[in-house]
Image (cartoon, rainbow, N blue to C red; front, side, top):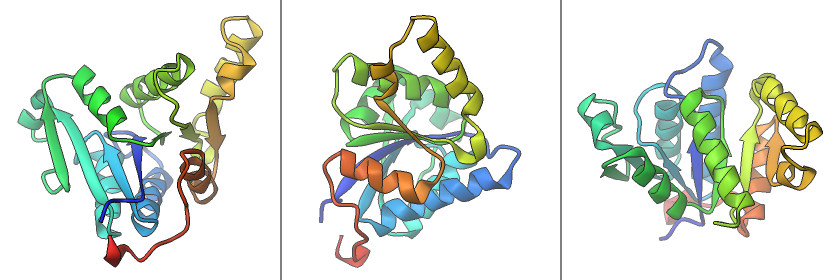
Length: 195
């Protein structure tokens, strides 16, 4: 059967210094699987990306990985994805991930995660898509960034309506249903054996 919804998740290719980051990545992967969803992500096997994908697979989710050829050559690809798409460059990667998703979610990560989040958010602001975009602020990880964004609003480079296009939450169990419902799907648990 077709998954009920598809969430694109951006997160770190490193695990981070705090084990709670790995725990939340696994929690998100399990939630997607237990609710009949599909994970779309960057196709990596390292860090939070690998933890997220493993948890999703183990919980019955389809996992679609999209990774540039150069990263496959470095043996960074997760070979047991349900689908693994190898593309030429980062532009193709992000476009295919966006096309295959109903919503976008950023977990803790570094420069790649930031860049992907801001692109999905700016595309939403420019009306290139109408899919919801969310940020999981695990243990206040994104608080300095959010304060900076508020400063940008205060200085007149952003406005409140742009900020409102980004849903921010500190609890995955609360944020994920909001995100799926905002995308127009049911967020109730399902019998994943029927998917």
